[in-house]
Image 1: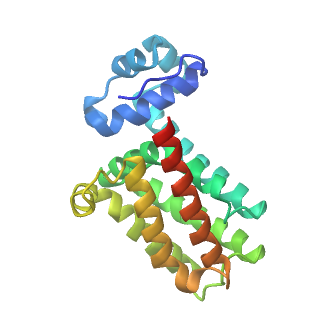
Image 2: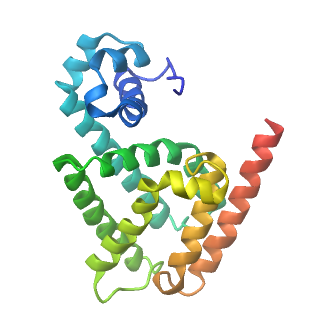
Length: 219
């Protein structure tokens, strides 16, 4: 389990602890007390902020969607889709979110269905924004493109054990995230991004990966 930074707000510590605990113990196996212990807070504080365990899970879903929205929207509107620093910033936060998404979407619950539907809607909104900024090619059926792309990408998370075995390393490790990011960009860049955008993004990703590896070696 990751160490929760004591300098974070109580709500942030609770959320981080829950994002780790739910995939590991499952919804039924996760208790308010266990999350509280991980976060260094009282169970009563979790109830105060989130109400119930269902409320805590809903807050985790909302946070993941909001984080994806914020990072991608900022990259699109600022013209930094092909910025190495922007791409490298996702390597640290991506594994936890990917692990949570894999668990949440594989649970087969109504919450999982709602999460996927929200991700499709958000993907459509971000795609339209990217089109407006000239970074992405228009689609004749945007909903289908976004839904299929999400199913393919998130399906890889559900099959993480098999994919990790094929890669020879943990899919959700920083190295695994880097390799999957590069492969995903190669797969989806053909007709999706505007001319020159995909090439610039591939170059930025290579630079980000190299810089991250150097930091890991020096650190």
